[in-house]
Length: 334
View 1 (spheres, rainbow, N blue to C red):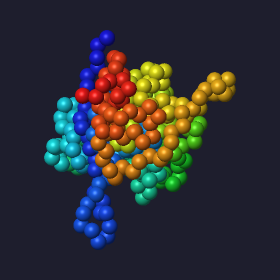
View 2 (spheres, helix red, strand yellow):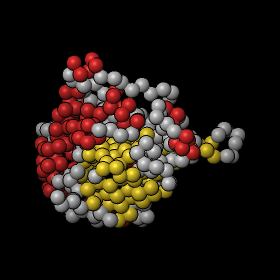
View 3 (cartoon, rainbow, N blue to C red):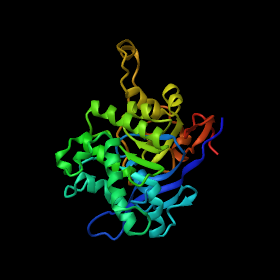
View 4 (cartoon, helix red, strand yellow):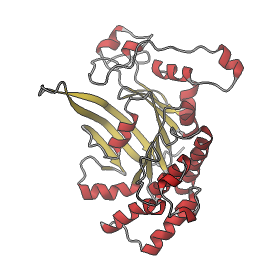
């Protein structure tokens, strides 16, 4: 099997937000939202990023897109490091990387019509001399994109408040497609939608991927959504990735205790299986991300913890082909 070309390569990504310990103190503490993340995405595939709320999923996507300037790490898109780029070069690189946000209403300018919203990226890049497109071509592309995402072209003069939630998200998707990107960062794009609308949007993402050869980093907290949309899945906990595997393999044979607990909480649409299966109940609350720990970040809640887990942080190790896990249950500390 020929391996696809690498599109996105994230190495040692960290995003620390400074906070003051008190109003009268000069000492700065930090929120360690993302604390050393590594992953790769190949052309045409979907990497699902899953974890509890507050684990750093959305911050990871925003740091990859350089909406947040990373504290440390490297983000390579098509072999070029986005972190070290100058503003003009970064703007040009963003033609190949667009984002779909979680809240379809907050991400749209309420004073602009849907047509203006979708055309805005093209207009910005045209004004900067990075896109050669006429007004007629731009308007034609807007109408075709609206039709492609399931909206009538006759709605291009309507404002965001005149659309439903699902329709607003379709506008956001059309806007992301306007520059014909290679990579789309999807930050929980269906979590604010009704279940019936979720399935329509997910199918739209799949159809667009097949049609335009898109690559996705797809963030969600719904395990069923991640299983449906993803080729591979990365499980995140407290700013770190604890397991990466092919989607089928992960759901069939999860290795990390945290992944096992997550999957045990997901309902199964089979009453007989659901009635007899055991759930793994995690004790304690998610620790605060304002402290760095020398050992495993899951130590306080893990039922399989060992002494070494308290003092050494496990690194991602490949156990089987394409299946990596950060846990001393499967490999000895170095």
